[in-house]
Structures are given as structure tokens and as C-alpha cells.
Length: 364
Image (tube, rainbow, N blue to C red; front, top):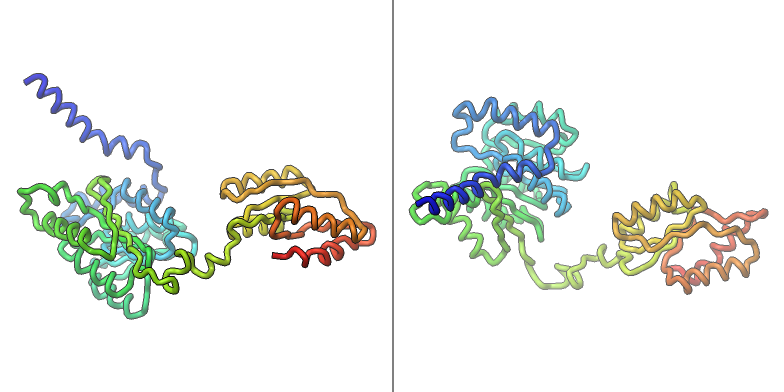
């Protein structure tokens, strides 16, 4: 009995300590989110307003925000906003031009969350649609809206209905992701003696997704479970998917190319260095100011696009020398693209013209 008691206590410690540990080491939420969470506890948990509602906890909110960042989603649809904690968490992960459409049945919940949204610089990304979620989905489908990510946290008995409508009406973009909250629902989805209607509905939903060939699914056991459902390739046709899975703009990238940017440590040269790197090129940064060049090098290293850095060469005048310079750099250093944003001036200001005249032989 003592040994059994010890094992049971150990199991209890493991189970009860997990959430506290995760909350302790997870990056803390923003002030507006912390304020919203405090209001949630102070008001909604002390009333019956939260009955039959589920809300996004701190850990789930940070996980959703991380998923938004990782997927680089710009348009998000939320079905079931409740207090708005999940909506604001996801909005914080969206870019400045991103948007989140939140479906919520109760008008008072919009009134509750709106003042907090307005305190956050990310609240402007959120549009709340009041009314039946299905009616809102129909409106979005009628206008041809599509979303990179859909988060479902609403009435469990309608999860399959929402999912089918989203998929059948192409509200989810190709390669988009659907996130579903409470997919483990207090273990009731796998306990054999479950009689709870929500647990049974989620069990049916999970199995329905597992059997759907249009998607891939994984359930993350974070708190009450979060399902990640990725839309699989719709067709293998190259016209639709792109050659080797790359669309036309992807194929115009500079992957594998090397770019040489003079004046790359400052001003427009720095901008060109970053732009070329973002387009896939490895960038050689050249500047008269070694410190500034090194700063840009560090920036590009963070993006994984650096090729090298050099101090700016001395100005040269004779046409032959200029042509030789261009030839040496292009052929000797395997350079595909040259951006001369900082000119090499001589007394007669001829070098820029001479360099420009020498470039066509090597232009990419």
C-alpha cells in the first residue's frame, strides 16, 4: 500500500505540475492581453455567462500566436470569439496589414472586448461579426473570402458542420491550416464510458477529420487539446501547384545567385541588400564604412542570406581598369547581380559611367 501510495502521489505530481510549469516558462503575454485575462476571471467566471462557453487560456493564446508567426498567415477566421483573448493573441502574431474576422453570437461579448482591443496596437486588425456563425460563413463565402488560418472554438455539436462548409466553399486557402480547440475535451473523446454530448461530438469530429483524405491532422495535447488540420495538396497538376511546387513568383526568386552591393552598409544600399537577400540571393556587402557594413552583415546573417563583406575599393578612372574590375568581380567571385549604389568617383566623375558601360556583359 505504501508503494502504491507513493506511485499515485508521483503520478498526481506529474499531472498537476505540468500546466504550472508551462505557464512559468512560456513567454508572458502583452499588457492588453493580461488585462483582458484578469477581467475574464473577475467577471465571467463569477457568473453563469461562461456556461457552455470555452475560452482560450494563456498557453493556448501564445501557441496560436506562435502558429500565426510560423505560418506567416495574413488572414485569419475565428469561429467563437467569447471574451476576445484568443482573437487578440492571434492578432498580435499577424503582420501590420493582416486581418482577423471573429464570429460571435452574443453582442455583449463584443462590447466587453472592444475597449481592450482599442488599447492594443493590434486591435485594429480585428473585425467582429455578430450573429450566427453559419450566416457569417455564408456571407464570407458569397464574397469570395479566403483565409490562411481558421480557428474553431464554438458549439461543439456544429464542428463538423463548420468544417464541411469551410472546406466545401474554399474559405481555407490551399495549404491553409484549421486549428480546433478542446479536441481532447477532458479525455472524454477517448474514455469508453463517456456520455457527455460535447465529448461525444468531439470524438465524432476527430474521427471525421482522420477519415477525410483532403487533410492531414495532428492533435497537440496542450491543456484541453488543439487540433492542427492542414489542407493537403488539392491536385498534382503543375499548372495549379506550380512547377515542383513553386509558383511563378517563387520561380523568379534569386535562389542560388550572388549579389554584390556597393554602399550596402547604409541608405538605399542597405535596402537593396535586404531586398536581394529576401529574394533568395546571397549578398556581398561593400561599403567605405566598415562598421556600417558589419552591422548590415549581422542583419543579413539573421536572415541567413549573407555571402560576405568588403571595404569599398578605391576609385579608378581608365575605362580598361573599370572593365577589368567588373570582369574580375563577376567571374572571379561568381557574382550574378551587381548593385552600384555608392559610386566610385574620380576627378572627372567618369567612373560611374564607365562602370555602367561595362556591366551589360555580365547583367543577370
